[in-house]
Amino acid sequence: MAKREVDILVLSDIHLGTYGCHATELLQYLKTIKPKAVVLNGDIIDVWQFSKRYWPSTHMMVVKQLISYITKDIPVYYIPGNHDEMLRKFKDFHLGSLKITNKLSLKIKDSKVWIFHGDVFDVVMQNSKWLAKLGAIGYDTLILINSFMNFISQKLGKGKISFSKKIKNSVKGAVKFINNFEDTVCEIASKNNFDYVICGHIHHPEIKNVTTKYGDVMYMNSGDWIENLTALEYADSKWSIYNYFEDPIAQAVDINKKRNNNESAQALMESLMMELNMKPKNNISEEMVDVIEAA
Image (cartoon, rainbow, N blue to C red):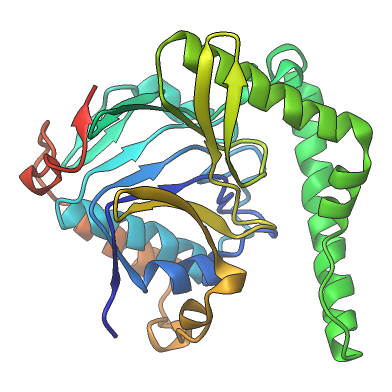
């Protein structure tokens, strides 16, 4: 199968290590594309809810797929979010083509792009972290209940439904939070002369132009791999939202052919460490120079 070329891939809010993570679907998607640069924009591994009792082979396969980009010298930028904030202490760390950074500023042709996770603008996150963690547990529980109800619904010949989406879309406070988040982000981006701003965090995929008192800015959010199963792609000189549910090619990929169900967790980790056995380097591959430059 010929893979679709993508100049820049932005993924966020995968939440590996949680029951709600759609690792299989993400793998199916990643097997259909050939990115030239990858931005992991936070909450990739959910350290808040991580448990040694739950780490399926598909979750490790996602990690190995991301590591494979590094072994192929594809630039990978990891921007930690609130659920994997422990990685923020490794800011400016390099390993091969991997770089950990708290924010990323790119220049694509004549446009300035600002990329960060977005939790810094979450008032609850900044002032009541315990409440945010409690909310994350409640959200994960709701996803579990939702999965069980969808299983029954499909057995009865009915379609899937997202409880959490319906709740978020119906609660005025949640809608207001999203709007305030987007407005705040765009105002700061425009004030600092950015043409584009890319976030994650709120699990709400979006591309829209926002007018602020400082001027216009294009706001983008990569969504998540819990409910929306979305990503941001830059290809053919334009940005677009990828949606797994609208991609029959990815849905047809058989991950089981690539999975070794008899492979132990230790063997998977040893395989991963072998892939990580590379020399550190500080500069990205030359093939991306014409696509992106550090601003």
